[in-house]
Length: 115
Image (cartoon, rainbow, N blue to C red; front, side):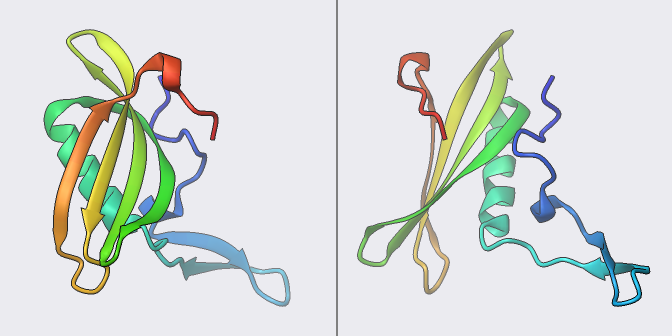
């Protein structure tokens, strides 16, 4: 259906990209993972244990308390024949990167936000 590309090309999942040098020749160059790549992989892993993943979108990062950062992802998932949006929230210590909680909750269609 969506093919896990809701937000277009995802550098977080790519290893290399084609860039152009000064003489306009194609050069294969590694690209850096975005800052949320580690958390994205964790969210995929955890949500994939319970749901069939159809697509995803990175929502963002926020400081929720002193020493607690949250990364959020919206997945489009399927379970028991029903498709619905799922919010995965990962809270962790920004210094040690120790995970405190991983919360998965179905997003109600009436409260969907346009991002």
